[in-house]
Amino acid sequence: MTLTDGLTGRRGLILGVANDRSIAWGIARVLSNAGARLGFTYQGERLERRVRPLAEEAGAEIITSCDVCDEKSIEQLFAEVDEKWGGLDFLVHSIAFADKEDLERDYLSTSREGFLKAHDVSAFSFTHLAREAAQRMQAGGSMITLSYLGAERAVRGYNVMGVAKASLEASVRYLAADLGPKDIRVNAISAGPIQTLAARGISGFADIFDEIEGRAALGRGVTTEEVGNAAAFLLSPLASGITGEVLYVDGGFRMMG
Ligand SMILES: NC(=O)c1ccc[n+]([C@@H]2O[C@H](COP(=O)([O-])OP(=O)(O)OC[C@H]3O[C@@H](n4cnc5c(N)ncnc54)[C@H](O)[C@@H]3O)[C@@H](O)[C@H]2O)c1
Image (cartoon, rainbow, N blue to C red):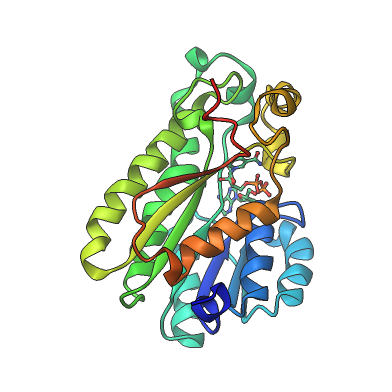
């Protein structure tokens, strides 16, 4: 089976495109080229101007606003999925947020409010969306989310976002266990650092980029297209035996001593 055989005609939601540098956009392009039918969401009217033309370029069948902190908004999204498609084959969750102050000071100083916000947007939203998506999936459905090395190591500046990513990665395992009997798979991709809007908010990221060339086995960072290729594999039946995993697409950074 080829990737295109596995993805042609499959219907999936992509949450997390903000602009053409977004990891979600890299994923969407690969999926669209492989013949998948896509639905895009954008976070509020402010981002619609950037996301709508990209979604149209990818031939999107659904383009709608969704704020993952707003239950009504998620309800409306899935009502649209029911109306347009009557089912779903895959879900891409590429969303994270933490307050700027919590990414600038020590983790020790994280506020209760900042902690809860980071976990709500970056971790709980995946569980919520997975629940809604799974109800609409048949056997063979697949979901992915995006994580980062800060989930398992203390990366300076990543702070509360790393703690939220640890929660997200644990959620992947529990969701995979819950949905395995329905033959629905759940995985994460842990991407190497990429210059995106979200990455710009992490104060220590400039130093991390400087380190990649010297440390990663491939001697370079990764592109959103490379993350997209791995995502397409995990979302396709080619990965039918893989669930509950975190796949590193980081140019061989993590495994080096
Ligand atoms: N860029 C990196 O270096 C890197 C590395 C590993 C993992 N990641 C992860 O990849 C994912 C995508 O980030 P990106 O780097 O492409 O940046 P990005 O800024 O392009 O994407 C982040 C997205 O999250 C969305 N978002 C935030 N709060 C939301 C809310 N309440 N409701 C709906 N959407 C909301 C934003 O609108 C945006 O589209 C994130 O989970 C990020 O943590 C990024």
